[in-house]
Image 1 (spheres, rainbow, N blue to C red):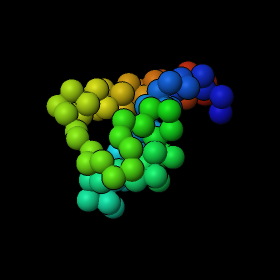
Image 2: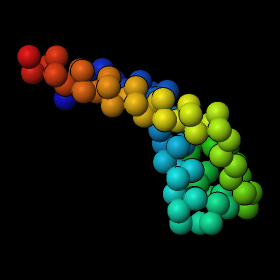
Image 3: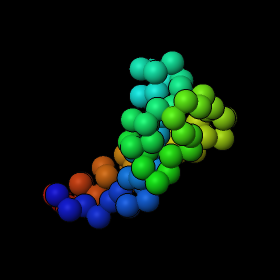
Length: 81
């Protein structure tokens, strides 16, 4: 719909967060090459390293998700109004 959001940086950050989630759920918290590929330039870990989720990372990720949902919702509403 060409809403103008999220930004390229926000998409990269969401991709890294999703890759982190996948590692926690599917790979017992151990980063892999799949994680590195999915996380792209923002990969925080390399193959074989245990992923660490700090309180700050968790908070910043939730803030990003909340912001993205709000931005996309508002942009979609504005587009159809």
